[in-house]
Amino acid sequence: MQALTAPDLSTWLSDTTRVNPTLLDVREPWEFQACHIAGAITIPMNDIPDRLSELDVNQPIVCICHHGMRSMQIAVFLEQNGFSKISNLTGGVHAWAQQVDSTMPTY
Image 1 (cartoon, rainbow, N blue to C red):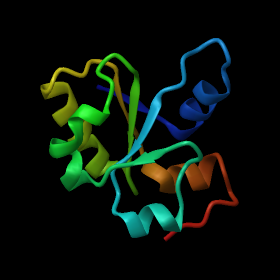
Image 2 (cartoon, one colour):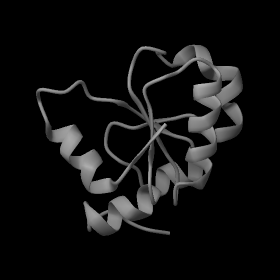
Image 3 (cartoon, rainbow, N blue to C red):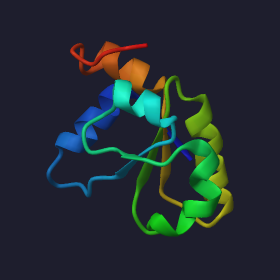
C-alpha cells in the first residue's frame, strides 16, 4: 500500500497520461452525502468484505475516508485479498478540503 497525499491525488487525477484510479470512499452514507471527491464510489467500510467482487483487482484503487484511518484498514484488507495497486489518501477528505478543494464542506 502506498500513502498518497491530497495534492498528489489531484495531480494524478488531472494527468491524462495515467489511468485514473477507482476512488473508493469507505465512509458511511451520511458522510459521503456531506462531502466527497468527484467520481468517488461509496462502499461503507463494513460492507467491503461482502462487496469485494464489485472491485477490479487489476485497477488502481485509492481508499478514502474522513481522516485516513478507516481507509488505511481497508487498504490493508484489500492487499490481504489479492489487490496490489492500493493507495490510501493520507488525511482523507478533510485533507482534500484543506489542500485541494477549499469549496468542499467539512464536518
